[in-house]
Image (cartoon, rainbow, N blue to C red; front, side, top):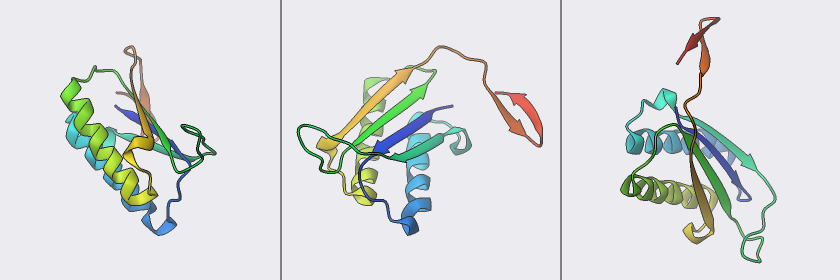
Length: 118
């Protein structure tokens, strides 16, 4: 169950919100071979300063239990970079991505008012 936290200082058009999220989820699910409903995405507008400039930039944190192979991380990074450029106007050189492998955790989510282990 990958969790993606996107922090950026770009401008996301409200009309494009849903499409932006769908494309992030779709790209992640495709590259990681996970069902889209298991991908969690959070987007936060923040004040940011990168390389001496307040030009649009982003920090993406991807947390998951499995380790990623280098070619998978590179392909996913390129896809996410293209999506952020298309919707937020952030150049790839101003995007930092951290892949964080977490220890196996006991995770729960609610299905029909009852918690179910995932």
